[in-house]
Length: 438
Figure 1: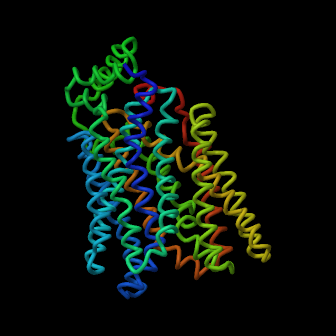
Figure 2: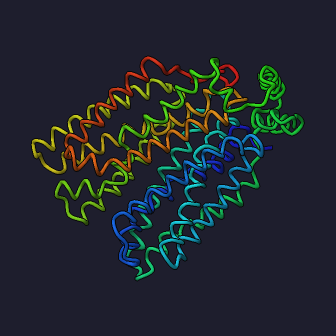
Figure 3: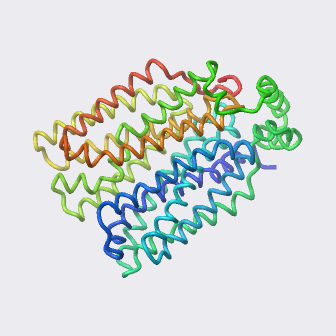
């Protein structure tokens, strides 16, 4: 029989494939959009709509994800997401017109919304307390892997002829199909199984992931927790006085992950570098470099999230993001060397990747009680995507109104606010069982 630690790692990697597809689908458009525009010939408004329709799909997907996860299970929700990813890849790649393209990109958004909630929640519910932070952070690692994969395949396929954009989009069909097949090999969440009365299957799963010696004790702890919360969770319950504070913390954690500016740097990087006077070739290279730094420091975070803890990482990361954005704004104002500016951006990316990126998903997957976890994560993730939508929507307006240096100063102020929130309102959860956190 496979050792529990190895088994947990393998099923966590399978569940985290949802994160890889999430990252790829959100990033691939950066290389596809100019080629798509040349092929179909649409205006700037349509360009904005093509980018934002994925986020709209995310928001709608998250709205339904909580109730679907509770009714049908975390695993079935991942099945649905994998099929939607596959349909989106095939549909966008074969689109005959821009309207068909937008429809299938919207389906991809539904998949991203579902996967962004279901993958970390599933991993959180199968991982032991002392390894949970690291395991859930694997999901963030696969997200940034997906982003880097998209940047890399876009670069490789850009010179494949008139259908280059179709090949870029079709690539996602391969990991989507593999994800669907691999899901047959993973068990259903033991906490969900006990929640719906499937005690025998839940105990069998616990034996696989915790070992025979610990399974019975873990089983009783989960069942006792659920017995205290017998009524079915509703949206009204999560806003009750007992749960309201946890929900507010989850929502603000999710919002700060987005409004500190990460997606602006990630997806508008070529525009930012072009504004600063870099050539197109240089801008594309620097975008890939950003993806590599994002990937590297997400890996580094895996070694510290369960050792150093969630809160220290958030404090260190937000402090370094504040400093790097401040120096970046000063450097732009003083018209310093372009590569000094690039260094500031890379420090910012590294700071986010080692802290807010993975730790936000870890915390919102573990702070809610078993009964409310699906709906609490759904509401928190909904606010995350709404924040992402408005930041992307307003960035061009802010940039034209304030200028690039003052725009970074604005994000620096947001990072200061995030630091203060983490300092005073976020509690440490490392090495603590989910039933104890609640």
